[in-house]
Length: 320
Length: 287
Image 1 (cartoon, rainbow over the protein chains, first blue to last red):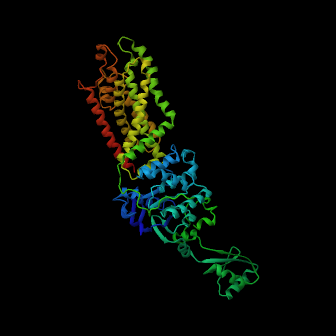
Image 2: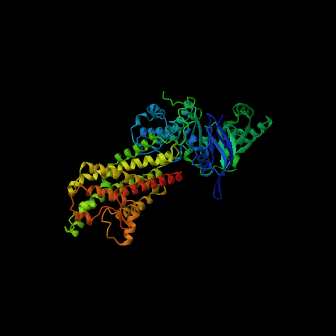
């Protein structure tokens, strides 16, 4: 069942069109990522879904309620982590969560336990009585995510949740988000312009200039961007190319390597090496990335891609 | 890790009420204001500094200039005004915390919560009014130093007037702050709104015998109608000779008609309601 249902959504600011006829839906329990460069309309869309931005036309239903007609009902059922921090730094971690629990009408009898559990979940239980002012950026973010989940929302909105964090903090944060998703079954709706973050999602919507230009699983996206390739480094490239040709594989030369597009690279690699014979010095498999997918769909690289953000993400955290 | 947040599969724990007007919410916003206030003792000291400067430094300076001919010490005259000034500046500066909340993002946390704007303003006003009333009452400690006599009923009456005045001014401050989107705006408000309000309220000089334009300005100033009752209840227990009370009437006169204290309080309450509605309205637009 769809928890987020967006139909022909449009948002104009004067003559500018921020969101241009967007339609999509997010199923319950799904992790859905909005991928796009800054200014693509991600934040405006999330603003509409969180009842903060009034759409020009079209409709958006979140957790069963229309965002324009019943904003209060929507707000009670969603958790939001904004791009910029919205904690009170003069309060302690525990006070921030308690404040939130009251604002979201968590029954008094459950408050203490929920707050303690939430702090435990993000590994801040021992910092409960510390002022948020003393927290690092990563800790503050974790606290915000704990806060966003405190009232058991049906959907957790994360608007660029890891912006401004160092790679290591981003990794631990994502592990946290994924663990919480597992444990609470909450639907996660996030926006990002980091490819590797989008890669952990069940489904991705690529948004550019206010329009959704592609919608699918990360695997589907990559598949659409092109096939897998095996790259071979050989002593005699032209000889090897001829041998591959004879075995029925087309190849091209790129940067001193033979590049062979194949259906299933892991199975094809031994056969290719066998076909070429003893000339192979090294071989590697290359799968199309989401970067390739983005390039494929939009015809250009993602703008202002932050270089530092792409480093240091271990492969393991993707296998949630 | 054994901790677990109850998932949405559990019986829905979130009440379906939309924009609930809860006393719990108001209480929490009130509590937050107090926590923040008590956590910055420097704020308590600074908001006492200016009134004390007016009371003692200006009090002695102007007092010696005026001389003893009036039959009343300038300290005694200005004391209720300085209390009012403390309440006003504390109320407005604590209401202005909305600007800080906006700057540091916390306002958003409150605006996206499923609570009504009315509850939000109620909490803010209650918090600001509590702090301002406490701060104003703290000033009463200095009464014996300037020869002002206080009785228990007087103190109670003063606290009551302070509270009403504080609510009006906090609501006024919130409605201003909701329009301010930058930090610099805060200074503008303090200098261009608060100071003139204090100067034109009768806190520092008597309101009779003013040039007409000054008289008009003082009569449209909401603070005027809170300063007068405050001075009235304090003057009542000072055993002044009749000549003094005649020379320094505590009632605001409009078109030659002296308003009774209850009317002044009613006007303050009316201002409080108007500012309150204004604050709710501007805060609703702020989202």
